[in-house]
Length: 382
View (tube, rainbow, N blue to C red):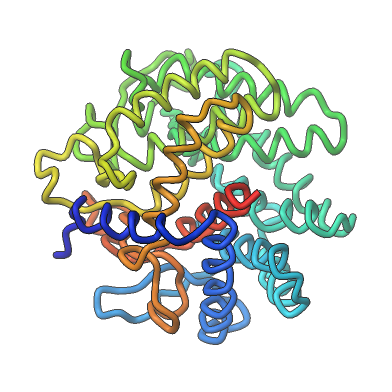
């Protein structure tokens, strides 16, 4: 078991910070990503998506139904945007087209993750109308999961379930509704997204603004049944990636709606996170793990947080948010967390934690870590 210790990563980050501007860090990481992702693509079949590495170091692949299937296409679009090289546009387009089978997927909320990063980036970068159909279909599928009695979008399951489950990750998928609402001037999707965010604000957070992972509601009454933190250390602990989803989600909600309630929530979460981060900015997989500091760090949570902090800085001008993102990005861009060329089958970041209680994806690369790190670098370098 590899532990992540603050002294090593702080030293690495300091060495990077002495020599590189944000622009140079971004160029270096995007250059690495461009070669790494070509290697990763070469190991995939025509219907396959990258997932992670197994304990023996072999590549784990999956199909488009996996909740993270949109992140690799999204990363390819960001590499194309940064480089302008048509080779990466072709790769991005090919991997995005693989997701067309998701058009009528109704089983869970993850259609937002899958479509946001792939098709909406393609639309933003190219401006081509051919990329609009999938976001529109996906947003309809996602909005169909909204229950007005609960005031939220069901994360998984269907109307036959007596329990209505909502996870904090679902905050991220609201961006699909808001983006499509902007494209077709539909107020309904905007209203659903805002209602879900307000319901989550009311029921998912403790007084200190740490978040539960899962809230279960009664489908008929909308009453809360129980609150859990399934992938964290305990139900009452502060699971790092859950807090990252929450920070990013409410920052995005304010960026899209300019509703001050969402900015207040994002800033309250940000203050809690900043007060509890280790010196190098990379959170432990759960802030309340009783083994801290002798436990895993989670680069995926740091990548998500860094993008959120950069966006929060851009929205408020508060330099503390920039300084936090800067610290996280410089550490992630150090040898401690960044893959060497040709390493890790083409993934970019190392040392992520998927689900430690479930002994799944522990201390491995993950596609969403790579995506949010590149997204953060895109904003950071500007």
